[in-house]
Length: 245
Image 1 (cartoon, rainbow, N blue to C red):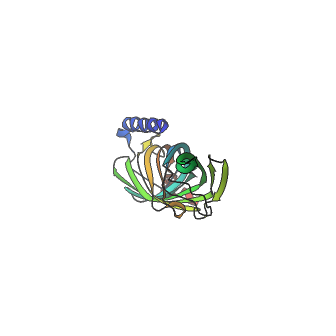
Image 2: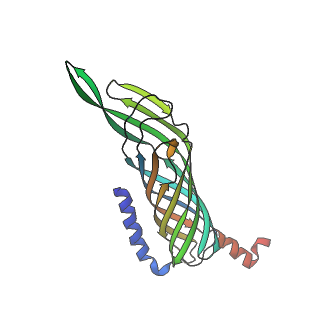
Image 3: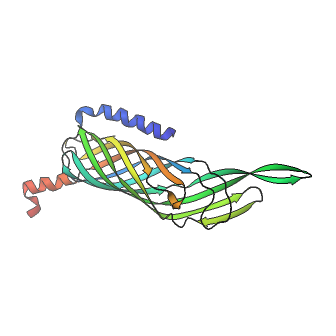
Protein backbone atom coordinates (compact mmCIF):
# COMPACT_ATOMS: atom_id res chain seq x y z
CA UNK A 1 0.00 0.00 0.00
CA UNK A 2 2.89 2.39 0.68
CA UNK A 3 4.12 1.85 -2.88
CA UNK A 4 0.71 2.76 -4.28
CA UNK A 5 0.51 5.89 -2.12
CA UNK A 6 3.99 6.97 -3.24
CA UNK A 7 3.10 6.54 -6.91
CA UNK A 8 -0.09 8.58 -6.44
CA UNK A 9 1.88 11.45 -4.81
CA UNK A 10 4.49 11.39 -7.59
CA UNK A 11 1.75 11.37 -10.22
CA UNK A 12 -0.05 14.35 -8.68
CA UNK A 13 3.19 16.32 -8.30
CA UNK A 14 4.30 15.62 -11.86
CA UNK A 15 0.87 16.48 -13.21
CA UNK A 16 1.06 19.86 -11.51
CA UNK A 17 4.44 20.61 -13.07
CA UNK A 18 3.21 19.80 -16.55
CA UNK A 19 -0.22 21.39 -16.41
CA UNK A 20 0.66 24.36 -18.60
CA UNK A 21 2.07 22.08 -21.32
CA UNK A 22 -0.80 19.57 -21.46
CA UNK A 23 -1.21 17.78 -24.80
CA UNK A 24 -4.37 18.76 -26.71
CA UNK A 25 -3.78 17.08 -30.11
CA UNK A 26 -4.25 13.32 -30.01
CA UNK A 27 -3.51 10.57 -32.53
CA UNK A 28 -3.44 6.80 -32.48
CA UNK A 29 -1.07 5.77 -29.72
CA UNK A 30 0.56 2.93 -27.79
CA UNK A 31 1.38 2.82 -24.09
CA UNK A 32 3.63 0.82 -21.79
CA UNK A 33 3.10 1.21 -18.04
CA UNK A 34 4.22 -0.30 -14.74
CA UNK A 35 3.16 0.20 -11.17
CA UNK A 36 1.72 -1.37 -8.03
CA UNK A 37 -1.60 -3.09 -7.41
CA UNK A 38 -3.38 -4.01 -4.20
CA UNK A 39 -5.51 -7.15 -4.58
CA UNK A 40 -8.47 -7.76 -2.28
CA UNK A 41 -10.11 -11.19 -2.09
CA UNK A 42 -13.46 -10.74 -0.37
CA UNK A 43 -14.58 -14.27 0.54
CA UNK A 44 -17.24 -15.69 2.82
CA UNK A 45 -18.04 -19.34 2.12
CA UNK A 46 -18.14 -22.66 3.90
CA UNK A 47 -16.60 -25.03 1.38
CA UNK A 48 -15.01 -25.35 -2.04
CA UNK A 49 -16.24 -27.39 -5.01
CA UNK A 50 -15.01 -30.99 -5.12
CA UNK A 51 -14.07 -31.17 -1.44
CA UNK A 52 -15.98 -32.53 1.53
CA UNK A 53 -14.03 -30.43 4.02
CA UNK A 54 -16.09 -27.91 5.96
CA UNK A 55 -13.86 -24.82 6.08
CA UNK A 56 -15.78 -22.31 8.13
CA UNK A 57 -16.01 -18.68 7.08
CA UNK A 58 -12.92 -17.25 5.44
CA UNK A 59 -12.26 -13.56 5.93
CA UNK A 60 -11.02 -11.12 3.33
CA UNK A 61 -7.35 -11.07 2.35
CA UNK A 62 -5.23 -8.37 0.70
CA UNK A 63 -1.80 -8.38 -0.93
CA UNK A 64 0.40 -5.95 -2.91
CA UNK A 65 2.03 -6.78 -6.23
CA UNK A 66 3.68 -5.24 -9.27
CA UNK A 67 1.73 -4.78 -12.47
CA UNK A 68 2.88 -4.30 -16.08
CA UNK A 69 0.54 -3.32 -18.91
CA UNK A 70 0.67 -2.45 -22.60
CA UNK A 71 -2.07 -1.23 -24.89
CA UNK A 72 -3.28 1.02 -27.66
CA UNK A 73 -5.87 3.75 -28.19
CA UNK A 74 -7.57 5.39 -31.16
CA UNK A 75 -9.27 8.80 -31.07
CA UNK A 76 -12.93 9.06 -32.07
CA UNK A 77 -12.71 12.79 -31.39
CA UNK A 78 -9.95 14.87 -29.80
CA UNK A 79 -11.67 14.41 -26.43
CA UNK A 80 -12.85 10.79 -26.71
CA UNK A 81 -10.76 7.66 -27.36
CA UNK A 82 -11.37 3.92 -27.49
CA UNK A 83 -8.68 1.39 -26.64
CA UNK A 84 -7.50 -1.79 -25.01
CA UNK A 85 -4.92 -2.79 -22.42
CA UNK A 86 -3.19 -6.11 -21.70
CA UNK A 87 -1.57 -6.84 -18.36
CA UNK A 88 -0.59 -9.50 -15.88
CA UNK A 89 -3.22 -10.82 -13.47
CA UNK A 90 -2.20 -12.28 -10.11
CA UNK A 91 -4.99 -12.68 -7.56
CA UNK A 92 -3.28 -15.37 -5.46
CA UNK A 93 -3.53 -15.03 -1.71
CA UNK A 94 -3.75 -16.83 1.63
CA UNK A 95 -7.11 -16.91 3.39
CA UNK A 96 -7.72 -18.27 6.88
CA UNK A 97 -10.76 -19.48 8.79
CA UNK A 98 -11.31 -20.72 12.33
CA UNK A 99 -13.84 -23.27 13.58
CA UNK A 100 -14.77 -24.61 17.00
CA UNK A 101 -15.20 -28.38 17.33
CA UNK A 102 -16.86 -30.00 20.39
CA UNK A 103 -14.95 -32.80 22.13
CA UNK A 104 -15.86 -34.86 25.18
CA UNK A 105 -13.39 -34.70 28.06
CA UNK A 106 -14.57 -36.96 30.88
CA UNK A 107 -18.17 -35.99 31.44
CA UNK A 108 -17.78 -32.51 29.97
CA UNK A 109 -18.05 -31.10 26.47
CA UNK A 110 -15.29 -28.72 25.54
CA UNK A 111 -14.64 -26.84 22.32
CA UNK A 112 -11.35 -26.86 20.48
CA UNK A 113 -10.62 -24.10 17.97
CA UNK A 114 -8.57 -24.94 14.92
CA UNK A 115 -7.46 -22.94 11.90
CA UNK A 116 -7.81 -23.73 8.23
CA UNK A 117 -5.51 -22.09 5.68
CA UNK A 118 -6.45 -21.80 2.04
CA UNK A 119 -3.60 -20.78 -0.27
CA UNK A 120 -4.92 -19.87 -3.70
CA UNK A 121 -3.01 -19.69 -6.97
CA UNK A 122 -5.01 -17.51 -9.36
CA UNK A 123 -3.04 -15.92 -12.18
CA UNK A 124 -3.11 -15.17 -15.89
CA UNK A 125 -3.77 -12.14 -18.11
CA UNK A 126 -6.10 -9.14 -17.97
CA UNK A 127 -7.73 -7.73 -21.10
CA UNK A 128 -9.33 -4.30 -20.61
CA UNK A 129 -11.63 -2.70 -23.20
CA UNK A 130 -11.79 1.00 -22.38
CA UNK A 131 -13.34 4.32 -23.28
CA UNK A 132 -11.32 7.43 -22.33
CA UNK A 133 -12.58 11.00 -22.00
CA UNK A 134 -10.51 14.20 -21.71
CA UNK A 135 -12.77 16.70 -19.88
CA UNK A 136 -10.08 19.41 -19.74
CA UNK A 137 -6.50 19.82 -20.93
CA UNK A 138 -4.42 16.66 -20.30
CA UNK A 139 -6.66 15.30 -17.54
CA UNK A 140 -8.48 12.10 -18.48
CA UNK A 141 -10.90 9.58 -17.02
CA UNK A 142 -11.60 6.11 -18.38
CA UNK A 143 -14.02 3.26 -17.76
CA UNK A 144 -14.50 -0.17 -19.23
CA UNK A 145 -14.73 -3.93 -18.83
CA UNK A 146 -11.91 -6.18 -17.65
CA UNK A 147 -11.78 -9.85 -18.61
CA UNK A 148 -9.31 -11.85 -16.53
CA UNK A 149 -8.15 -14.96 -18.39
CA UNK A 150 -6.82 -17.14 -15.57
CA UNK A 151 -4.43 -19.89 -16.63
CA UNK A 152 -3.75 -21.14 -13.07
CA UNK A 153 -6.69 -21.48 -10.70
CA UNK A 154 -6.51 -23.88 -7.78
CA UNK A 155 -6.42 -23.84 -3.99
CA UNK A 156 -4.50 -25.82 -1.36
CA UNK A 157 -6.29 -26.22 1.98
CA UNK A 158 -4.53 -27.25 5.18
CA UNK A 159 -6.32 -28.07 8.44
CA UNK A 160 -4.11 -27.43 11.46
CA UNK A 161 -6.07 -29.80 13.67
CA UNK A 162 -4.72 -32.92 11.97
CA UNK A 163 -2.30 -31.55 9.41
CA UNK A 164 -4.46 -32.78 6.55
CA UNK A 165 -3.92 -31.04 3.20
CA UNK A 166 -6.40 -30.90 0.36
CA UNK A 167 -5.87 -29.52 -3.11
CA UNK A 168 -8.89 -28.38 -5.11
CA UNK A 169 -9.11 -27.14 -8.66
CA UNK A 170 -11.24 -24.01 -8.95
CA UNK A 171 -13.16 -25.47 -11.86
CA UNK A 172 -15.32 -22.44 -12.55
CA UNK A 173 -12.52 -19.94 -12.12
CA UNK A 174 -10.90 -19.74 -15.55
CA UNK A 175 -12.37 -16.29 -16.30
CA UNK A 176 -13.46 -13.34 -14.18
CA UNK A 177 -15.16 -10.09 -15.18
CA UNK A 178 -14.68 -6.72 -13.52
CA UNK A 179 -15.62 -3.10 -14.09
CA UNK A 180 -12.50 -0.96 -14.28
CA UNK A 181 -12.04 2.81 -13.98
CA UNK A 182 -9.01 5.12 -13.95
CA UNK A 183 -8.01 8.75 -13.80
CA UNK A 184 -4.72 10.24 -14.98
CA UNK A 185 -2.86 13.10 -16.60
CA UNK A 186 -0.81 13.22 -19.83
CA UNK A 187 2.35 15.32 -19.80
CA UNK A 188 4.29 15.96 -23.06
CA UNK A 189 7.98 15.08 -22.94
CA UNK A 190 8.86 16.71 -26.29
CA UNK A 191 7.82 19.82 -28.22
CA UNK A 192 5.57 17.93 -30.64
CA UNK A 193 3.76 15.95 -27.94
CA UNK A 194 4.66 12.62 -29.55
CA UNK A 195 6.00 11.09 -26.30
CA UNK A 196 3.93 11.58 -23.16
CA UNK A 197 4.33 10.73 -19.49
CA UNK A 198 1.08 9.24 -18.22
CA UNK A 199 0.67 8.74 -14.43
CA UNK A 200 -2.65 7.16 -13.44
CA UNK A 201 -4.64 5.76 -10.56
CA UNK A 202 -7.60 3.36 -10.74
CA UNK A 203 -9.65 0.48 -9.41
CA UNK A 204 -11.45 -2.65 -10.57
CA UNK A 205 -14.56 -4.11 -8.96
CA UNK A 206 -15.68 -7.70 -9.49
CA UNK A 207 -19.00 -7.99 -11.30
CA UNK A 208 -19.83 -11.53 -10.20
CA UNK A 209 -18.90 -14.23 -7.71
CA UNK A 210 -15.62 -15.97 -8.47
CA UNK A 211 -15.78 -19.75 -8.92
CA UNK A 212 -19.57 -19.64 -8.28
CA UNK A 213 -19.17 -19.07 -4.54
CA UNK A 214 -19.43 -15.96 -2.35
CA UNK A 215 -16.09 -14.54 -3.49
CA UNK A 216 -15.30 -11.15 -5.05
CA UNK A 217 -11.92 -9.96 -6.38
CA UNK A 218 -11.23 -6.21 -6.35
CA UNK A 219 -8.07 -4.22 -7.03
CA UNK A 220 -6.62 -0.75 -6.46
CA UNK A 221 -3.70 0.27 -8.68
CA UNK A 222 -1.33 3.12 -9.49
CA UNK A 223 0.88 3.25 -12.59
CA UNK A 224 3.30 5.45 -14.47
CA UNK A 225 3.23 4.95 -18.22
CA UNK A 226 4.86 6.25 -21.39
CA UNK A 227 2.66 6.98 -24.41
CA UNK A 228 3.95 7.12 -27.99
CA UNK A 229 1.62 8.84 -30.44
CA UNK A 230 2.68 6.93 -33.56
CA UNK A 231 -0.37 8.13 -35.48
CA UNK A 232 1.17 11.62 -35.67
CA UNK A 233 3.97 10.33 -37.91
CA UNK A 234 1.48 8.79 -40.33
CA UNK A 235 -0.44 12.05 -40.54
CA UNK A 236 2.74 14.09 -41.11
CA UNK A 237 3.85 11.75 -43.91
CA UNK A 238 0.44 11.91 -45.54
CA UNK A 239 0.53 15.71 -45.48
CA UNK A 240 4.01 15.81 -47.05
CA UNK A 241 3.38 13.08 -49.62
CA UNK A 242 6.26 10.95 -48.24
CA UNK A 243 4.12 7.80 -48.23
CA UNK A 244 4.26 7.80 -52.07
CA UNK A 245 8.05 8.06 -52.33
